[in-house]
View 1: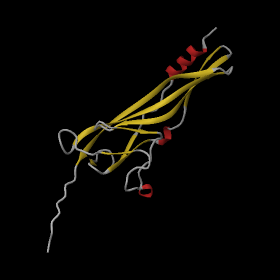
View 2: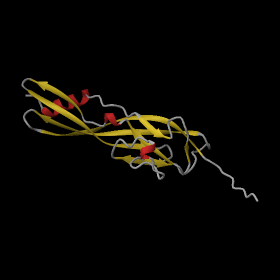
View 3: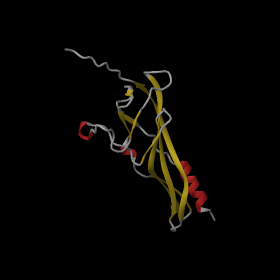
Length: 164
């Protein structure tokens, strides 16, 4: 007799989860400015469960990985946890205070000064469960995928003068 939990682990090992495709505003390659909110998101088209099935004889085990959250390492020692893919920036959804669900404001320059790039890392976390054709099932160890983009952080200086 085949152990269904072992068959579930085999199906889990065969799964290919999508990598997060990072989007930001300001756009990648453009600097984030100190004390100005930036938006972060991943491609929402992939925010759907992924499944894999393994069969033996007359029975089968289906494993389902469900997207749970994205944990962002912002490169300045902060972490942002988002329970969704995030909102893609557009003029229609613009908010002066930043993203409605997934953003970060850099509060200081990174070591090295203006224009230094930091690594923005998106870790996409998935919960994993399994079920058999006979109705048994359970939970498996969570899975994750990640992507990294280098983003420059800079500062805007202004000078106030009085004329008149």
